[in-house]
Length: 154
Image (cartoon, rainbow, N blue to C red; front, side, top):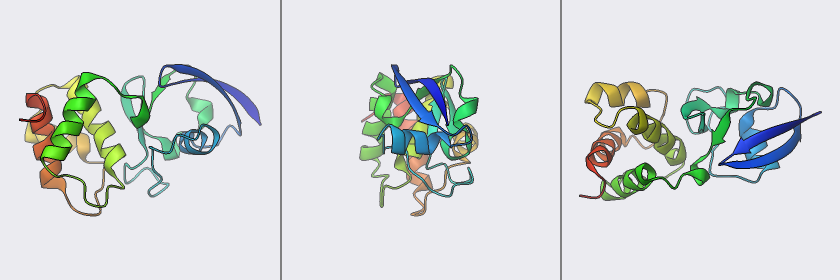
């Protein structure tokens, strides 16, 4: 067991965990932050997406020992205007069905829009390729990202 000093959602926290413990379980079990979901455990579905220094990563396959001093941002930690535009667009386009994948989908969409405020269909497809939606709402997800890029709920 080791002690890790982390910055999660702009808050300094200290956690005790085994070095190979996935970041996902540190967030969910140690810090009680359940917005990040467990999907496949193999970094294939994207349900566990969080940001490390602004880049989307799969927390189920990121050992806590590799995080270092990078800032961790979870779905609970976003209050920036871009997340509000994404959330408004998600609602306007009626994206969620079961909702399970949505935190990972939204985290990937936010990262895309922060890096590329006017994405093309190809940009969206590339950025979202690692996120699986069991309900198949991919067309609505793309429309929502385009709507968010234009300013949100229009």
